[in-house]
Length: 436
Image 1 (cartoon, rainbow, N blue to C red):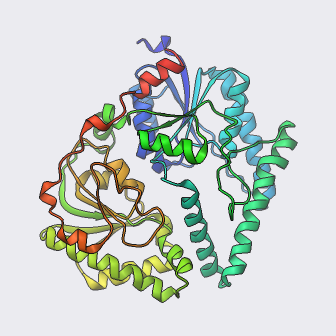
Image 2 (image 1 turned 180 degrees about the vertical axis):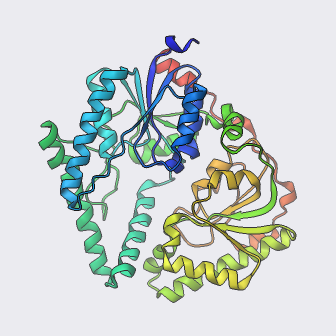
Image 3 (image 1 turned 90 degrees about the horizontal axis):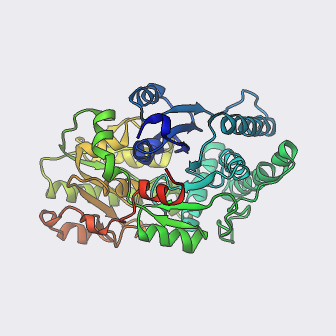
């Protein structure tokens, strides 16, 4: 289709790591039928890649709508940000006149301003998953809150109850200022997001969607979970990585060659969670994870004796003293373990590794959409509520004990069957609900 005939679509994929997780594949497929304007709502370190996408014709344009005022007072910073979101949405919709807007979030204030503007202009509003959907997002939220409370304890050297009060006081006050007071001052309206201000006993999601018409997931199970737990108007599509993955990989990474490598990608927040629920000390929590990870690594090296073991941490884990202690003990246990910098591109590392090992991180979900044969392992040995997320996922080897891992014959691992994928592509979904 001629570029001048293409209708414009706004696409907001989220932070840079999520852009490389799913966003760029959605963008690439959308560009076949639409003129895509990228909404950059988080700081991106490599804007040069966006310029190259624009030169290649994949992007019509990109708008850097991220805003981080220099003022220190939190309330004034929130007010300045939301003023910017409101004004920029008005200007952008007037300039580009999109037929649809696709965003990664349905409750961040920035995304709500843009969805709200779209609703006033009869522009189709779509929320798309930037990664896999948690089996129970309410449990996932509790694990993350426990992690933040634990880090507050360590940072300020305060007891749990005080860190708990600080965390929830901040959540609740931020909620009312963010969604009610500040938007009302700016626009005369309030926001009613699909999350609750009191995520202690009640469910985090309120199952009432006010700002978008469709919610897109990548499998029937993810679609079902979104409907059950979040009340989402969900539709499942085939992950665009199947359609355009090869083109994107060569554009971003160049030629990829696999290595005899076991890549370990630990899930964030687990150590703090175990410390809280088991009511154990820092030292006991550190040892709890060290023992399990060291045994798992020993087993894997017996299965793959000439493979190199690499551990890649998230940025937040590099500032987590308990997880750093676990990693230090692992490298003392086995001096051949390599610790990779947190700023390394995780997707590129997964493309190069033959074996990928984690507990229930979404990295397995991403790697399971690759056409190349890889051994993907989910270890549910840490007693985490979401640990069985991949227990029934074809293409992922799930183990709920180290004994089961030790007994397994990895030579029988086969490539995931494409028959289990949704038939509906992103392009077909857009043609049906937006038109060309």
